Image (cartoon, rainbow, N blue to C red):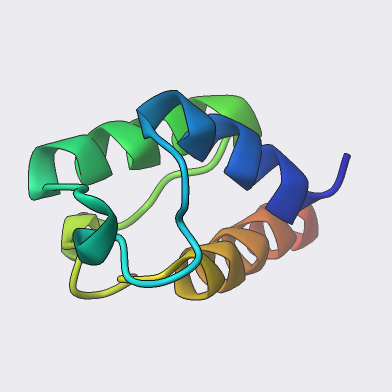
Length: 77
């Protein structure tokens, strides 16, 4: 399972239809932080505090891109 598929699987716990902006899908800032914590646990990574803002990664694509970057950095480091 690739990163995007796993991300979609985790997001499905919070609802369906995350193709656009998370806020348009009804995700609030608290749910967004819960999603990030779940991703941190799943992928053994850590989001910087400033990334805990839904404005920084408002879409599935933006979140997936950041997640892949953090995983790559963890694997390199």
